[in-house]
Image 1: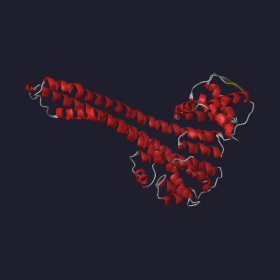
Image 2: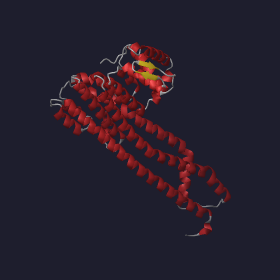
Image 3: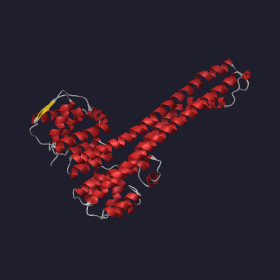
Image 4: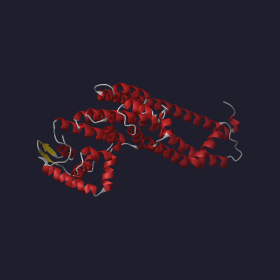
Length: 391
């Protein structure tokens, strides 16, 4: 079934949406806003909803027009769609843009959509489109996105309270450095700090002098790690990929699972292995592209053996070994799909476990810091009141 734009029974609605999409194209800031709002949960919901219409053999442009009508409070009744008022939501902006781009360029929806989603998801969308878009394939993609998003959310929810408490403690130390301690020394010029009170002053002075640069450096470090996941290549990346506790190892596993699932779809659609690799190379990140290029230059139909010779250890050694068996079977796509499902489940379990560890570690860290602050505060009090004596 062709996914390109064609006029049909929904013609009036499609014409109006295409016109609106042209207006969006002339406002790139509006498009960037919509793409920013088009998060993982919104994408997973869209794929599941489009799958319902594909199951009913509704053409994709008409399915998108119907979803726009629902999004904007319009009406849909059989072949008649009345679109609602313009809505500045992600789908309210993107659906008209997609329809306009499909008509202007002649591209399929998955080709237009691939420019707006993460590279791993773009690979899957491309494979689904090339293999013949079906509702089942879109539902599997939605499930994969939801699993990853759930694991990320749990990790984020575990780390955010820790980050907030660290900021509160840093703020208290800054206040002590610029207000409390100077006032104490002014009132008690002969005061000698002892015990943890001296450590408290050193920490407070460090926060006063280096707090902002340290915070900025931490933000830049996190941004650099995030950027490196898709972009860092070469020997350094191979080493980082093999350290289980680091995010690069998790990224290796997730990109490998997405690639396996995409290859299963394309091989199931009777695409030759070199052709499938070329198709997936189009939307690949630099990290995945480096690995696909190493496969393409070998021109070897024995995919498992070719992966082993690259030396990247991608997706992982266990998967490479299994592929050398499955690729010799009558239906290698089933074996690849099973491997992809195992990888995704294992990764989801690992990320959820990491979220639990982060929760306990964060609570322990905050508890230790609060205990140290209480201890240092008591030593500060005894330094200010020398006559207090031991407890």
